[in-house]
Image 1: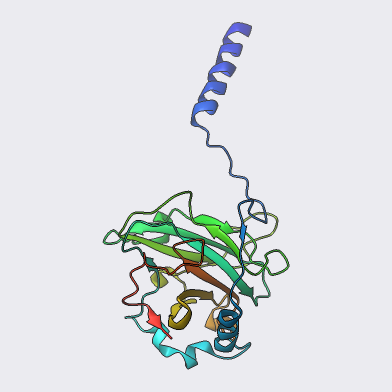
Image 2: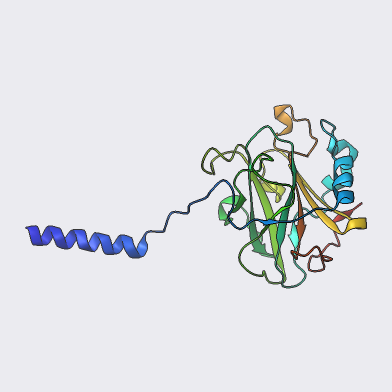
Length: 233
């Protein structure tokens, strides 16, 4: 009997060893952050465009048109980087990304492979200019890169079951909760989120988290994104 019990335990150990996924440990501050400096004139323009408590949707309706690009589309193989600009939220939100190939759009958010970038997007945790690379290498041409915000996502761990807003806006409960556009003068791609839905008496200022997106870490001109449908200012 002891021999049978031991054998069963050993078999169970082997099954777990080869089939059980290692639990991902996510810390509040990513280990691979790269500190950078955002140009003063870029910060001034962003601050001008996103005044506190002012309805951004009313001031920039073109960003909410169906024709306006809401995601990043790669025109050629490239790395992708996201840089923290500012946070004006009252919640500890989490931000991440997902990818799929153009023409193979998922029909449901449950099909997305969600990857957390910043578990806690708070300016008492992050420094302006903190940059992360998406993934570990390059993405092929034709890749669509979307982003998601988990409302109140951080409480010592990432709360994946909380309300989540996607840049693929059909996956959202109510409406478009982000904006994506280019500051043409500075060659900067801006991503910003509003973390309250209109039904929650949102101020609609869309400055709860603001990031820039680039295809390089050296502040060179971004030339790997298909920006033909991205609104420019």
